[in-house]
Amino acid sequence: AAHAWQTLKLLGNEAVSAKMLWPAETIYRMALEEGGDVLPEAEASILHSNRALVLLKAGHFEDAAAAAEEALQLNGHNSKAAFRQAQALMELGSAAALQAAERAHRLEPKDAKVFQLLEKAQAKWGQSKTDLEGMD
Image (cartoon, rainbow, N blue to C red; front, side, top):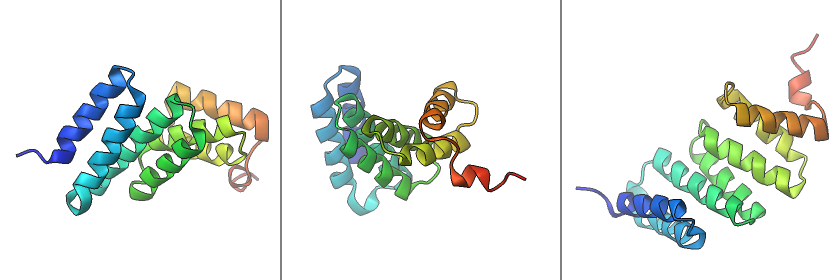
């Protein structure tokens, strides 16, 4: 039997497809609450990442960055969350966008959108210290 959070996740995805951003955000939050302790961390990470997408589209960049961070705390390999966090931080004009973009690029090295975002961040803030440490 499907858990209620799974049904809510699907409903949230449909709301996003229909460009119903705020209902989608509410539904994803409900899915997280409904899932509680039975919600696998990887799924919780996806739900937070989906919230980050909705918040990005709605122009709520600080909330989007926070939702992406929650997703990454649960699953450090969630490349979509890393990308969305970098996008949100770029929109906020935060230098932290550079490290976020580098993280997204490490997780998805072949993704053209990730690479474009990384280039944009590097153009604005230069190479990060972590990037330079491996240089001779």
